[in-house]
Length: 502
Ligand SMILES: [Zn+2]
Picture: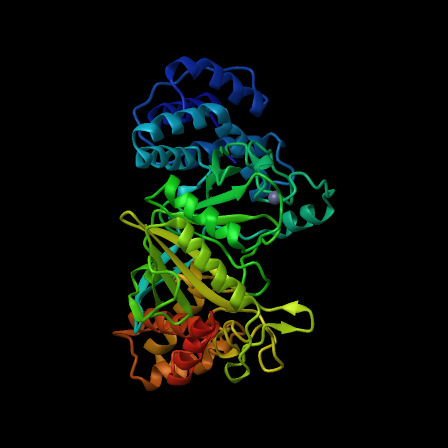
């Protein structure tokens, strides 16, 4: 690797930090010296330049190259580079209390300005690596339930074997307890845990309890935030969840918020730490209208109905939070114990519970809205990964859990799919190549899909769009698999039976 001019790259970083408002000219000498300390350097000469960087990736990469040349990264893995460049960015940043003070100073005047500031800071600090997020592919696809959004996530770097080995050999310290704990703020990182030197949290009070707001470093949608309890305690969907969710949309009315379900298979990937996900984004499910209305006696102030959606969603809307919480809790209690063998819904196997809810809250003007998505995590011989989970015939597209984000109509699909889509497109465009393409091990699973598209007349002209639309259609069917009540006459009747039983 070529020689790196350290003074120049540090000057670029400082200029970037000043332009993004991470620091002020008064902080400059301090920040330069902190950067030198992290790099183990002692000499600096300021370089003047005229440039405006979108993100700090370039100077950071050059400084990581320099550290690698000097043998400071061993082994030289992406994790080691992420750890170093995160420490470098931290040298440009305000302390947590300064960030929180600024957030609340803005909040008192304008709630949106507060979240805009904090989101901007999370990107400028490289906590959200915008250069990586920009690699994600996203498109919308029409379905009978409205346009669904499909994302192929390319921003989470795949671990290289050296990093996996380092993680395996690293001591398990149990600190921080998990990836969501607030103790990650400023954490240097380890082979098992992400570098969070540039991470800052905003303290929140929900229902009188301490919580924190942060953004997801992978931002699957605009202002994708995570709201976590100060205490490391397991996820639990309960009356308190409804209270917390509705309190959150009181604190930040321009954000929606939802919780993953609290059981494996139908929950998110982290069940060990109580948390929600929200943001400034309107999901396809939020746009879906009611397909029938419901009435719950004793709740005259609550409008209720079943949402026109492939999963089973009860929507409640009202002005009074207490009334919504009361009814939502009643529905949750009823669902936890509800079985209907004719619809294959069993609440328990022995002592093991299967029924839970994925709840989502948002504002509609002054009113509060709660979507309650009924979930069941039972497995059967025919569907060993889950009866209400993507079925085997769709595993070539997705076999992972349908969590909160996907429930609402945004698919997060694995990176492998991108190259497989390209091969599929090639096979449909140049039929004589098809045989060879489907001999590749990763393409075998797509053969039936290929035949269906081919039979539908897909060719070189329309292959790319047809494949994207087809993925959207399959995602819609996967959501139907995850729905406890199917969108059929019998399914709708069974859904009404449950609502009546509440
Ligand atoms: Zn935790």
